[in-house]
Image (cartoon, rainbow over all chains, first blue to last red; front, side, top):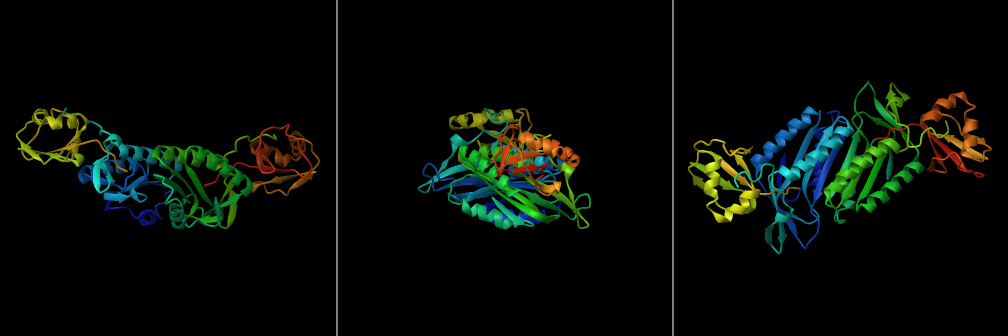
Length: 144
Length: 144
Length: 73
Length: 73
């Protein structure tokens, strides 16, 4: 798991992960690259991350992937990420395509639902919590 | 659609596709990279391609992707591809992740089933049709 | 004493309180009206492990994190 | 005259024949015993477009491709 201040160097990360697994005999490598879209007049998105819980979430996924003979990787930005640059890359390596295609879907969807990351729109230098696009995590409401 | 003699330059292709769509405002980019696994004592896999029908297949997919606001790309090797190098990259770009995750799965699975490409194991310089791993295309048996 | 910290957009300084269970933490936090609407949609971690049981016992020095709705990626 | 070409691993030189429909092509190809097992698992393209109808009419110069089971990737 890799966290960076500001936008990701997508080519460096993609290439390094490829090299890391070059001799691991995986037949399928599926990265997911998330890029900030220009919409609603935003200049950037900005992210807060709670790293200890993110690390625990990622480690649990690494175990789940291992049980299926696969490996997962992840990189995310902290702070401001301008429009048309990338905030997020995750990836699956597995021996066969079917497991890789299923895992990347599950991994990315669970990431959206349960990775402790908070998103803000940045407009004219102001940072506004993207509440309408955010999802309560599993178990939300416990203290209500 | 890109066809290459021998293994693909995965980093070059990944990076060039990223650059091509850098200003297209897609939020999700999912490549699928297929790499030759060392198994059953093979030295390489080798591929024949019938380009006119592959082109038609790809163009139809490009249309299908367009209807969903997405773009698909594809590169494949012709001839011998040694173990631990890559023969195949496909990719989807789309505004949103859900469409991208669904399309990459459908695109790769339909590719395996219907792209006119024939695979051979290469062992000690001999080229043996991978018949047991091959799938009759849609409509097979018409002339039987 | 346990510490309660509020993550991401909640924007509230950590609190220290006496509490033997998460239920007691919940009761105390609800005294702050501004927090009530957050609590309905927040998940909870105890010492960085997600928890789901109000009866979870607490001990001296425990750290409780309040995690509002997320949107990574 | 139409031309029938055999793709990939079939490893057979193209044939030329007189045929008004794909059904007539099928009948002629089945005279070659070595082809019969291939035909059961092969798909067919007419002038590089996949076809599914034995009654497809043929015209002078048409090119029929026989596509054995595939495995790209």
